[in-house]
Image (cartoon, rainbow, N blue to C red; front, top):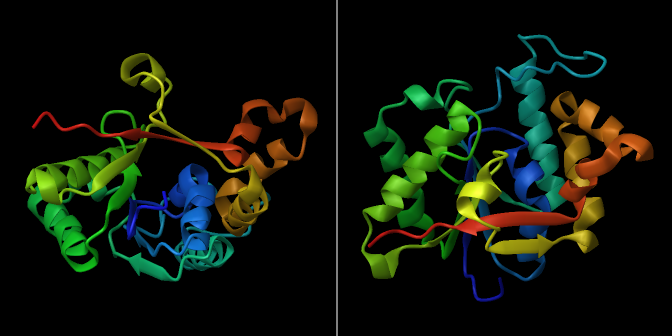
Length: 221
């Protein structure tokens, strides 16, 4: 990671960055690499209202915005862009507008790497729409100018169809950072944190605090 000059993170929801990349991003920051997070929505339509509930449908957007800001503090990200899209509608945004948004960020920041989702392996429609916009936009760039696409594949069939991840970032030294970021997103992560705190049922949940896997997207040309 030391050779990177600027990291651009593009995810649609608050907490996407924490589940996938909190340790990796904290390490970039510790290494002096600037990190910009473009979060497309405030997760207004999140299914969870806290456990036990402490939000309502009306208050959830404000709560999730504050949770996002607190998670940025935990990770160390100071350049947070709230892009103003609405949760669960990203898939319906016109492609040309989504692509223009991504290209504007690239033109401004000149990132050496973009972290986002991997198309067709991102599970949620908003995830997929974000992934597709990133890939479409970067693919249109001259090959020599393309940032590296370091992508997250959450679907269970990813290892079978994509093979083993190209990058396995061991983040044990940032376990506490990632845990604090999870705690910041309390409205959505309560059940997950409870699972982590119960040793006999934690199982694979612990892996989120130990390793962050990525696939490098390879364009055909």
